[in-house]
Length: 165
Image 1: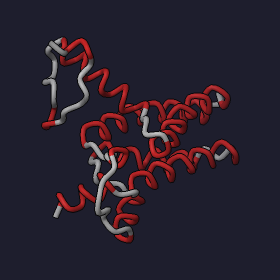
Image 2 (image 1 turned 120 degrees about the vertical axis):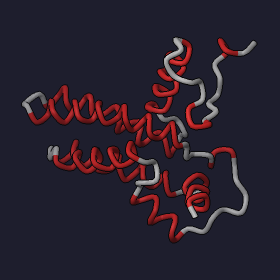
Image 3 (image 1 turned 90 degrees about the vertical axis):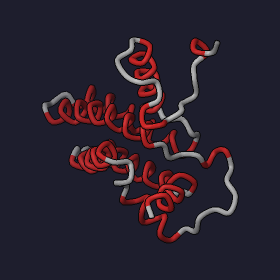
């Protein structure tokens, strides 16, 4: 059952809708000045850091959109380690931004919140997730230092040129 769900999340449009919903809550916080809207995105991000299957918007979309018959390279979107790592990083960035706004540093707080907002918009539209890139880079550095295994949980990220022999 989980493999069927994983395929729908991996190749369907659900994760794109999830990211756009997260971005819309943060954009709403920018335009209304109501930082409470950013808490919704923070909660959604915490859920995904706990498990990449805790994606309510993506799950609802996957119920109504049929599984694609053929897959394009750009459809490959769902990665357990990358999603969890990016969300873990994003929790700290969002938390810092929300804390700054809540403590009277609105300009700096909203500037910091613009980073995950941009990533939430770029990920579904262009296919680039800043958090995923940072996570893979950090894991690569830790693997070089021997702190973690190169491919956690069977993940096979794109190797950097420094590791090709």
